[in-house]
Length: 409
Image (cartoon, rainbow, N blue to C red):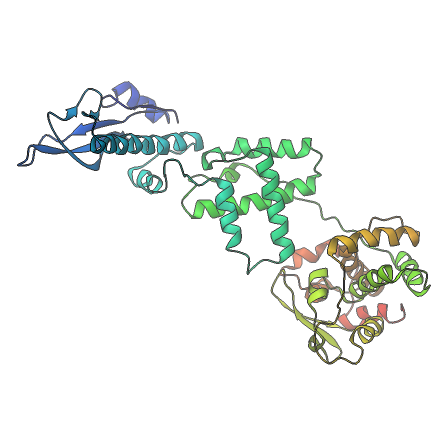
């Protein structure tokens, strides 16, 4: 839809109207003085334009006499401060009306009268909220619902988008923009999974903006995000054995031993690093670990293997309450140390804390033929489709699956 905005003129011609049918619209914005005058000789001013052949009149809350009105230029005559303010209101209102039409043109939207006024109320000259500002405001509202690492990840995605183009207007968010950004991410070396993750996060804020009425069209309606392939980095039973042998060797520094012990605890329990950090002693009872997974908010009960029990006893000591595992380094430091440990254990994999959870799931199935539904329950997945990545292993019951870890430590 092409909109040509003129600030002085008359009703669009028939030719313009036929162009509108082809989603092209000639929009004329003018200022008119009402014909009927009050007793003091003044009459109200209106902004006049057309939407789908219908005349729209917006009052300016300004009244002037015939002598004060410059009809040709659409301004109030004079040099007083009051006149300057009146003309500023006129110019700003015309600019706001124009901005709505321009945004509609760029987003491909054909305006209706109702939609125009919805958008007009949100346009403020000089302080229009950018997509970045909206996204960060929306993210702040989600702080209580999202984990720290998730918030950190979203901020990273938004920062990368801002580096590509700062001060993104809502009208910039077109399907073409999304496609170009995808090409940019690929050009700077992002893998397909990273690109997919970035676009999915951006889409959440685009949809939020649309719900808020700030965006008329969703650019992702005509764009399909490529499905990311799950990156399942796990240790085989033989590789885990090498890691355990290194743990028992007493050759690691205290810092390295602390990290490796924590990694093994996650391997034996399936806990994600954030959930493992937050686990309390009171959540361990009746031979199981009971907790609510942060990511899915689902209650989970994990049977405790003999190997996991040894580490729980080490961490708990004589305590009866409080956080089970204390004095851990940052996630970044843990992952860095794990890569060094893998080298020392002759494991040719770039492992991280996440590999522990994948190791649990893979060995649980491979050794004991566990069923997907049981593993999904143990992992705290909200949908069994999330567990399908481990479907290359066959089935068995829940308790038997846990026993694989009994003799490992």
